[in-house]
Length: 303
Image (cartoon, rainbow, N blue to C red):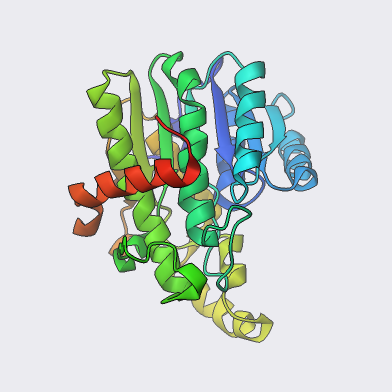
């Protein structure tokens, strides 16, 4: 039996944060949660874009409870400001969906001097999760869901040159793969932390296969986009399907902490969400430990 949005239970009374909730997989997730009665915090860099996304959802889900809040994961001060406001204004946090991400830009730095893909895709979410930990602890059976990618299989950790300082060794694909590998390493480290501290929280991870989202907009110029778009159509799935693994990871009552969800089709490119297996690099316990330590050091957020 294929898992679809029809399998999502009632979410009435629950509070959910979706980072990058204004487009792509995030927008699909916000809509699905809102349809089931949750209060959803749509977190994104640009408030106006978030507000436009909220109004779009309200056309089809008039009763949707959506709060738009500004969050720039590439700026740790913004992460602190967001977390402070959320912790002040909300009593609970049932699901933290760390969905936002950037894909394959040229070498550039976040406001804190971190290579941008790792800064946005991993370190920003690491800091956010840590700053919201008390709220997760206060909510029974809460979950953190991180969004990785099949590109993690190309990712390699190099703790001697983790952040490609001054662009050394940088390639857009290598850094993207590393950031997506970090999403998995972080999830396994987080689940171990929850288990060790006997916390009623699950850390789960998912990937969307190859989905039609605006992440692809950063690959090549407009001419290349025109050529590749028809080719992409042969093996990509709509964002509504791509969002299913992260939705299942966040609400399926049978989910066990540390599980990894992705599409059931060939090479996990498309299909319905099932448990999948990561590359062995993602299970390296020493790398899990090292990434955790360096993440606390870089973000200055200690769990």
